[in-house]
Image 1 (tube, rainbow, N blue to C red):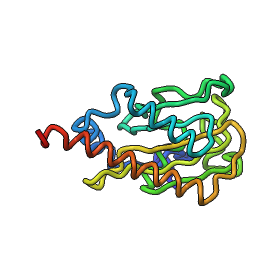
Image 2 (image 1 turned 135 degrees about the horizontal axis):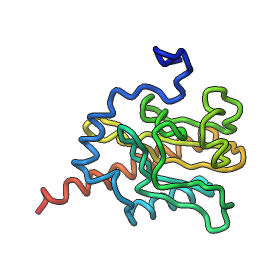
Image 3 (image 1 turned 45 degrees about the vertical axis):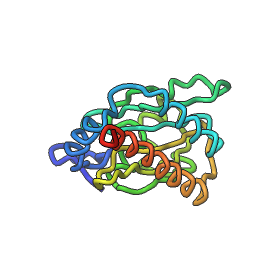
Image 4 (image 1 turned 60 degrees about the vertical axis):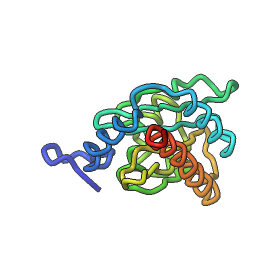
Length: 183
């Protein structure tokens, strides 16, 4: 576990040494600064595939997270979640990005490291599954993720589906990047 050197308090959000390079790459790709209807539609695809009331395509900057793609089911409870912009220390996507691997939290309160996160108390999030969006340069741009306000048994199958969706989305991102060169 990582602690703040000066205070000795537990650092809940992992150190992200790749953040400056990621910020440059996101600017190159034109991602992480505005909502995107295509990515909103992809977030809906994530929600449908994982039968989740909330899903997102989240890009992690140096100081904040930006959900360029966001979906919540029309019948989902009003919880204050999701928001397009979150501080970097909210939620679980920054952990996926810094660790460079998927994360399944079937009930976040079962994990001391994650139970104290602001999205638990402020937004009512109880369950999370996310997979990294690792682009062809090797930089983890962000995540595809789904959450629920109830505990969920995502299991390995849910994580595998999230990873598959991440790979699918990366094909779209790379096709966008290649499009100007193709002409």
